[in-house]
Structures are given as structure tokens and as C-alpha cells.
Length: 382
Ligand SMILES: *Cc1c(COP(=O)(O)O)cnc(C)c1O
Image 1 (spheres, rainbow, N blue to C red):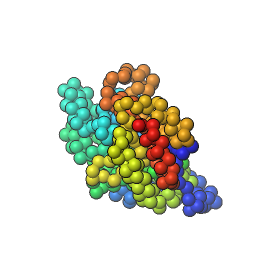
Image 2 (image 1 turned 90 degrees about the vertical axis):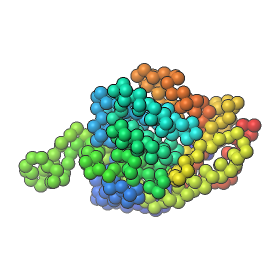
Image 3 (image 1 turned 180 degrees about the vertical axis):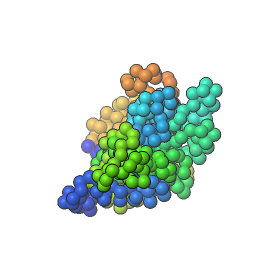
Image 4 (image 1 turned 120 degrees about the vertical axis):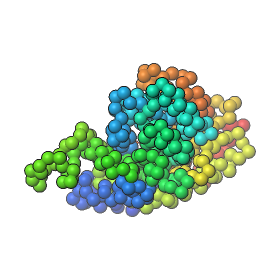
């Protein structure tokens, strides 16, 4: 089966991890701060905080932005459940903003309209989590402007998007947001097996996230609130978790970063070939906004109306092609229906879900494999 996504691990990656295994520190050694600094440099942000997953960092980001009971958080219904679960971890209320069917990203016009109504009803969100679906950046200029106008914080869920740009700014620069979160799960652009990094330009948000990821403890003298009793001294100042990244993971991340631009270029070249193959067909590839560079985590297509998506999906799988569906709208998950959401709440997201399909896209996908995928799909979509 050709998978929809797959990591690329080099000999240099393997050596980087084994050298940590032979060193004194398997965790909390030099690799994690090195990785954090590299991500800060890459994204042109001031601070980067590593953790054991993007999910943990979305939680830590909500805590840093003081999301708690009685607060409201909005996100996109077309995302992985982690984008909205983080608000629920903080006992906040979650709501969704419908998508732009052209981009599958949160629609800035729908967002503006929903904000006006929310303001009237005194139900403005504290935080909006925008998701750069497939690595395609949301339109951050109007989103940042709305955030300023309504005094709302923005988290970018950039799990799909490391290595991409919005206008001339790297995703993660936090020019249009308060915090950006990346994931390094194996199917994402670069991997640390499990892991993530959050970037921000605000030292207090960085400190809060770092503390949340390590039990709420600080070992920094300058941050102590009480008398330093000796060299062993540390303080727990908030209630945190063990969300730390290990040095083994960070070493893999540091090594993978050397390949990031190669990976992104290969993904873009393959995505362009898909587009060319589907020209003059009824297969509609979701492409990034003009003026952006997508990391192209996913190759998303919309099938024409007359197509039975389940039939196409099953036939592709039977042919050894690991197509997928991204995503089942979050609000239709049983857990979320239990919170009161129902079919019809976000009609554009629901319509998108009916016709969407994800085709294999990863750096080591060969042109021959891609030709097989395209031929089979075109045959099915006649
Ligand atoms: C993968 C993913 C996450 C979660 O990342 P983990 O590192 O696996 O916790 C969050 N949001 C989106 C959109 C994702 O695709």
C-alpha cells in the first residue's frame, strides 16, 4: 500500500539519535535547547518551546493565554480534534467558524460576521485557533486585523505547516498571532517521532508554556519568588504537566531540520505534478493562497458532485493506494455531538467533508507511483 504520508529517515538522522543514546543525557540535555533555538531562527520568532506533542503545546498555549472556565474558544471544524480539545482541557466552551470551501481553511468573512453577532450577544471568544490545513496558510492579514479589532488572541495550529511562508514571513513568525504550534508526528513535514514546538515573541507566554510542560517548575534564579535555600533549590509556581520532549527526539528533529527545505521543495514539486495531471478533469485540487508557500503536508482534492466518495475511496485502497479523508468535521464527532453540536451547524465544512479525499504525498513518493495514483483516480472519476 502506498501510504498517504510517510517519514523520510536518513543515515544522518539515525546517527544523531544513536549518538544521544551513547551520551550522558537521554532527556534534558543539550539537544532540546538547540532544537528550540533552531526553530526560533527558522521562523524568525523570539522564543520556541519544545514539548512531547503539538497537542500538549495547544494545551499549554491555551493555559498561557489564560483560557479557563467561562471563556470561549473558536476554531475550524475541518481539523484534527486536537485543535479544539485543548480548549476543553481548560474547561472552556468551544465553537467553530465555517470554512471557505475553496481553501478548506477558516473563512475570514464568516469569521467577521460571527464576531459581530458574538459581540452583540456578549459572547466574544478569548482565543481563536486558526489551522493551516494541508500546510496552506490561512489568510492571516484580515484574521489579525479582526483579532485587534475585537481584542482576541490568536493561536496558529501550524501542525501541517513548518517550512511554509505567509507573504514574506515564515509560518511561526507570530507576526499575525500570539503563539504558533508545530507538530513533528511522523506523517508531518519533519519528525521527532512524537513532538512539537510552539513559537512566540512574548517572553511571558514562552515562560508560561515552558513551565506548563515541566510540572510548573522553574529552576531559573531570576524567577524565584522566595529565598533560594541552596543550589538544589527549585520552585513550583503553577500546576503543570510532564509534557517534555526528550533529547533523543530533539536530536532527530535537529537532524531532520537539515532536510526541511528539500522536503518542502519535493512536496511542492509533486503537488504541482498532481495539479497538472488533473488539469481538464473534474478533480479539484485544494491549492494555497497566492503569495504563500505551502509546506504541502497533504494533497487534498474535492471530487465532482456525481462521484460516490466511498466507492472511489474503497477502489483506490483496493488498488494499493492509501488514500485518506481529512477531516471528519470535529463538531460531528460523537463526543462533540454530546456537547450539543449537530449536523447542519457548519454546512460548508459538512459539504466539503462529503467530497474530499487525500492523495499520497511525501518526499519519497516516486513519479511512477504518482502516475499510477493519477491514472487510477481518473479512471474512477470518469
Ligand atoms: C497532527 C495534528 C495535531 C496534533 O499533533 P500531535 O503532535 O500529534 O499532538 C494538531 N492539529 C493538527 C491540525 C494536526 O494535524
